[in-house]
Length: 377
Image 1 (spheres, rainbow, N blue to C red):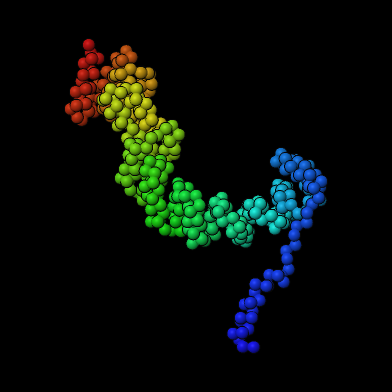
Image 2: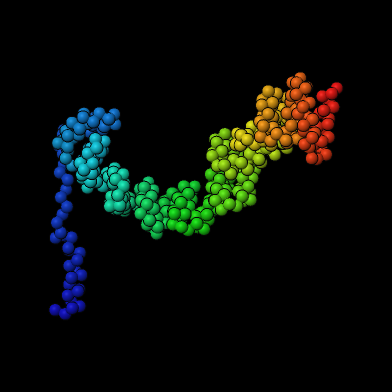
């Protein structure tokens, strides 16, 4: 028979090959009455396991296995129980059996166990398990999310990037996408591409506080404080901020520092505009972000003395400023004036005269003299 004829003959036989292949054994069926018993013991065993009643759970799971030896979830719960008892080998065997019986339902506990072991071989096995689950459920974005950090851990960068593309196609590009891409590219050593992901997301959401702070942090690592200030100013002037946002800002020392300074100046402007209550709230924000913002403390204390408020609070803040800078004429003047308003003229005079000795500019010299004259009347 000629070679071409042989090839043609074999090709014609291929469609028939499946008919002669051994069929996979079907899972034996369990009688209905037996299944009802199984369900009772299964839910009871799961409740016992959740409540950490391990001895009872073990007995119940044993009943489950006898009633339905083909149930993957029973094997999975048994693996979970063995793991809780420290029986690592038994746990691994049970979880692997569960995965074999029901790969779609039992892949995650098995992968969790393998990843928890932490060695390279186990991590590779976990990758294979999750890849199989992903292959069987290609539109399940949660499985793809689970697989991504495994690829990153194993430095499978091309696979990680391709998987991120899949995730975005399924769920759409969002903040989580941008953050994942930033982290992956950064760990790859492609800093330029990582930083571009931050800008890409900010084009979509220009007022994202988290990503603006991340951008500021990148500039801070580059010691580019001019750009850090520019981002901080953008946050302060364009992002609607609430109490939780300020808590987040406070965790970043550069953003907290610059935004505190910006808020101090904003409070001064509010005073000039006659919006005293809002000004005082803004001073409080500035001091929350940077408790040792001497500029804010001094101006806040002085404006309390002029426009009304807790004078004792003002005195405490003013005292902190001269403690930090004992020769600062402006701070000395504020403290002396606050003491005068409380009737402590002798002590007020001491601080006002000291302020006059240290002043270097005419506008402040004029104010200090006015305060001294008021003291002498």
